[in-house]
Amino acid sequence: MRWSPFFIAAVALCVTGCAASPDPRTGGFFGGIQGLASGSYEQRVQEREQSLERLRALQQEMQTEEAELQATKQSLEEIILWEREAVQELETNSEVLLAELAELESLDASSEAQVAQLKQRIADLQRNTRQQQSALDALEGDGSGETDPDLRLQQLVKQREALRKEYDLLLELSLELAR
Image (tube, rainbow, N blue to C red; front, side, top):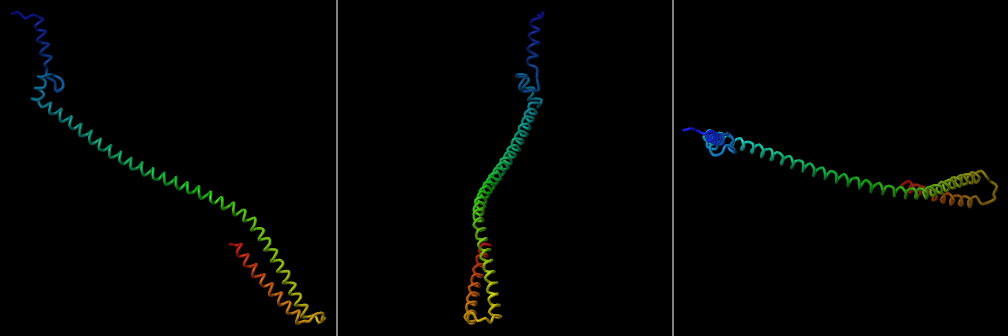
């Protein structure tokens, strides 16, 4: 029996087609049987399971990190919101302060007028007090008799009381302006 070259090539092709491979995805039926018999299939399954476990652990780690990042993001958003509210409050307060300052400036103009009036009244009070003192000195040393000394003294006492009342009023006004 003579083997034809065509037959030998076909047998060689079949044998190489059924050759065993450690990879269970390749190698066909005989490769699968060889993989099961040698344990390479189990080894490959274990490698895949280990790889899957590593990927699951990595996924869990990533989810934990994502949760931490979300918490950080939320706390930063809360801080930013608080800062915005604080800035808004500061802006509102500065507007109120500007309004109060404008009011104070307008009041300051009237206060200046009140202060000037108060100063004038104090100067008048001092001048009247000096006149009162001069009149008392004249009454004491003057014996001219133009007027009744008792009547003049009563007039001076009344003037002094009026000056005292004016002084008390001016003091009260100055304290009000100081507030």
